[in-house]
Amino acid sequence: MTRQQIRSYLEFYRDLGIDAIYNQRPAKEPGLPAESSAVLPTFAPPGDTLQSILADMGDCRRCKLCEGRRTIVFGSGNERASLVFVGEGPGADEDEQGLPFVGRAGQLLTQMIDNTAAKEGIPIRRSDVYICNVVKCRPPENRTPLPDEMEICGQFLFRQLMAIKPKAICALGSTAMKALLNTKDGITKSRGKWHKWRKIPVMVTYHPSYLLRQYNQVARREAWEDLKTLLHFVYD
Ligand code: URA
Image 1: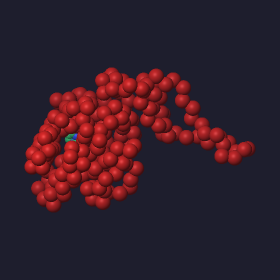
Image 2: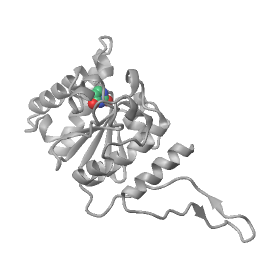
Image 3: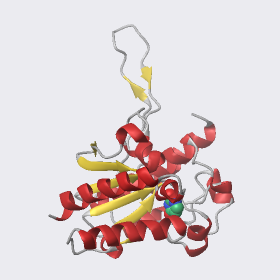
Image 4: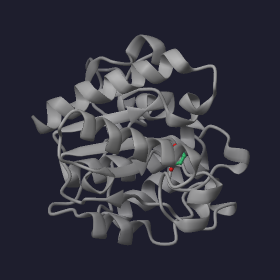
């Protein structure tokens, strides 16, 4: 870990009211030095809410994505949703409006949710679910978030998920999948199957931006299938 990452971690824990962290595990055998571990678990304060998470984020400067952002895109939708969609990070439109998935990919996501639910006779719309991203600030040139950015901001995502406690989560694309699941598998292998994040079922599917590319007709059909499975699981 770099100094900057350690600083971000410590600031994060301090915001949670934790002001002492011990970075040592006892020695495996007497006489050997104590082991050092840099892996810090996610803590959520008791009674954590989306409002308190947002307040803790404040004018976040914990990673360098803050330098290029206009707005922190925290999340939107039903705070008591049974279903949460997790994307990668805000694009230009989201950064401008402060809301997730409002650009072209977002319009496709809205259509997918609304149309699939309507066709399947499930009485929900986009506003009934909750939508957020792994990172809350727009990466420059819309690049994929870096591991340290995902790790730092992922702490807030985990708190959001713990506060909402949905019946299921949908990971949109490989960044969301990597943030939630400890897997080295690619999206093609993982999509359409159930996984778990802390006991909550996770369905992995393609990111809507990928589906927007014209040659991805097969992927589109597969994503629709994944969404059908997910919606029936959550709302039947
Ligand atoms: N892509 C994402 O992953 N998230 C958004 O909010 C918009 C586009």
